[in-house]
Structures are given as C-alpha cells and as structure tokens.
Image 1: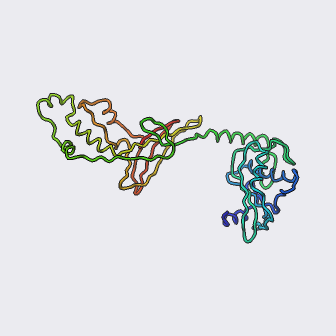
Image 2: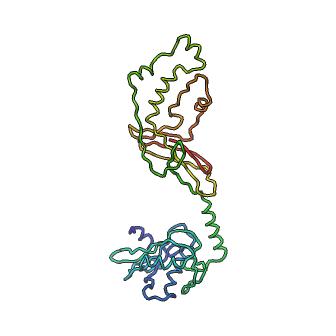
Image 3: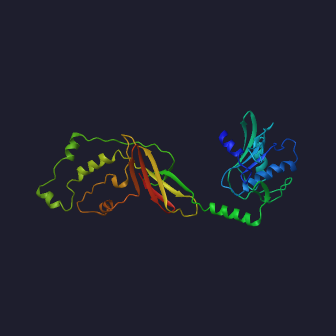
Length: 321
C-alpha cells in the first residue's frame, strides 16, 4: 500500500470508515467471546453508511490531537482463516482483505473493507455477536441498527438491482448470432484484369435495342456490379449485439468504440459503404431504402484514431461497422 495513502489515514480521526487498534486482535487460542470482537467490527464497517473503502489499522495508536502513531504488531492474522471465520457465520459472503504493511521499520496490519451489499449479519450466536442482529458503525463506535436503518439498507439494495445489466458482444452480421468478445477477420483484395478494366469504362449502349429497353434495364448494370464487387471485397462487416440481461429498461444508451487508424485499415458506416447496383433502371424498393438509409452508427476519424458512436435505446440493439 502506498506510503502517502497510509500517511493520509494516520492524519484522519476515527469515523464510520476508519478505526485504529493499538493491539492485534486475539486469534490463536482465543475463545469465542474474544474473537467475536473482530467479527462485530467487520460487520459494523460493512453495514456503515459510507461511499468509500473502510480501514481498520491494527498496530496503530490513535493520536488525540496529532498524527496517529504506528507501534507495530508482532504477528498477523491469517488471511485465509480470517475469511473462513467470518463467511461461515454471515448471511452471505462478504469481501475484505487483510494486509501486512511495512512502515518505517515497523509492521502493522490493515483490514480493508469495500462498499458492498447490505445488510450483513451473523446467522448464529457467536460470543458477544447476536443472531440476526445488524451492527453498524456510528462515528467511532459500534452500535445496533434500528429498524429504519435496516429498511433503508434493503431499499438501497433494491434500487441497485434495478440497474440494467448490459452485455456487449461481437456478432455475425448475417445471422446476428453472438460470437463472444474476440474475433479474427480476413479481408479480400480483388484487382481488375485488363478485360474487366475495359468493361468498367465501356460506353453506354446507344443502338435501337438499348433505347427500347432503357426504361427496363440498367445499361451499366454489369460494369457497376464489377465495380461494386471490387469496392466491397476488402470490407469486413463487423456486427455487435448489445443485450440487456436485467428486467429493467435501459434508456438513452450510447456505445462508443475507439480504434487506432492504419494506412491499410479504415472504418465505414452504412451510409459510406458501396451500394449494390440494380439490374433494372426503374427504381426498386431496395434502391429507395438505400437512398433513404440513415446509419445507426457514426464513424468519425480523429487524428490517429477512429471513433464509432451509436446512440440507442431499448433492451436489445444491433449495429454494424
């Protein structure tokens, strides 16, 4: 742990997220009543009203009007045994760590307790810890929570469970089947033979038959199709699926993907992709849809990066790069 951060803890007073213990908690050969003090402190910090990690500094003497003093400990708590001890008694698994810290030629212990699901309580009587009693940290002391506090903890948990759980995966464009979070793509690079090049630049047909069929047949269809194949062959359609795993609607969702640019790699949105030509010169439904197409995804170059931005809503969304 960073020394500057430890110094900042030593300058603070005890509160709902910080406690100093001059002596190590009794562990080896200690009875249940003695060990229950450690259990109660951990439970109280888990249930405390805070928005930051809580710390119990063991081997530190609290300073009343000055910096708290590190006095050190002779032995440390066994982290694995400590977790088994606590989690074998609580209503659900809890998260915390015990760390031995070197500080100015001394060693002391730190129990770090992150913010997590509450309330947590012991499902059995253990020493001075009561069964089903919710302990909280109030200021620098441990107390029993009142019914209103416990109900608010439950409400807080219910609200957190309403958060939509979104999962983004790469997908197959044609089948829209999720493919996971990694994928290898292979692009093709076609080239035009001299015959094809001549075909691309051949003039429009001007004989009487082409004039009669002009209203029904696109005279440039074959050359446009060759050009379309040449332009589209190097492109690799890349799809994504965004799935809401919860029962709560996700609103105003925005997905932003940033990728590095390369002289041989570029990104296109749907509006910039080659459009397959129509065989008929009469406008078809597909050509009308293509002309009115508005891409869900916006692709913008920014220096040495591409930015892919999609604004979506609902529970499931799908878009293509």
